[in-house]
Length: 155
Image (cartoon, rainbow, N blue to C red; front, top):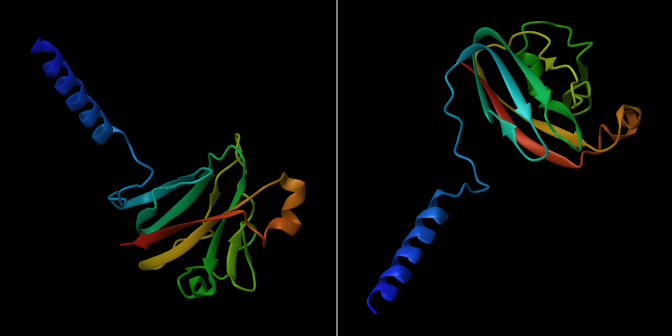
């Protein structure tokens, strides 16, 4: 008779341990080390690494692993002071609010990189996600479905 309470307690202990081991939706902050070149991957709901640490003279590229959206890297206008080049085209365009990359497509699309290295500092940006195909992007680029915050740190 004593084996039944013991079995129940054991089942409860196992269930508790499994619930603590199950990953949650929240993520720990990025602790990646600075590298010369960093590839930032984004999906329907996440950017990884959320903080891209780059060495001076290095660069950042974005790759889209989203199954539902086309993306774009969007920086505030303050990025102009951090750029080591004057021209951002053809991969980034100047907008009223700052700088926006060309559409970053998924399913084998090519990566989009910064037009040039950034000066040392910390730069917040967002990944904007849009529905529709490439033909819809002209009108939809200013109206994202989701915005994922991220940061570049040049150390």
